[in-house]
Picture 1 (cartoon, rainbow, N blue to C red):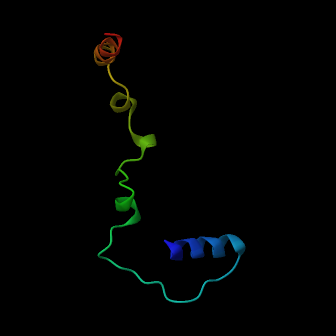
Picture 2 (picture 1 turned 180 degrees about the vertical axis):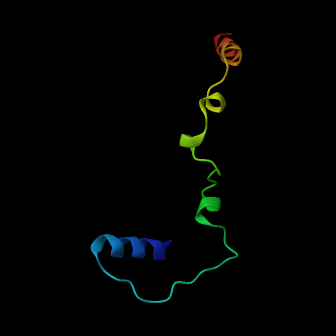
Amino acid sequence: MAALTALHNAETGGKHVTGLLYFDASKPSLAEDLALVDEPLVDVPNEVLRPDKASLDALNAEFLS
């Protein structure tokens, strides 16, 4: 993570970073480490994001009882 921070800081500062970056394939990727999903939320259709009326009514009834 420190290497990525150094690269980002150099990019924003208009500088170059020299040296060797070590890649360890046995470690999980950043997306795996953060448990990110395959599909971005912006691409999920409304039919999947929003419950149907019957499901929503049942859920609300549970909170009201």
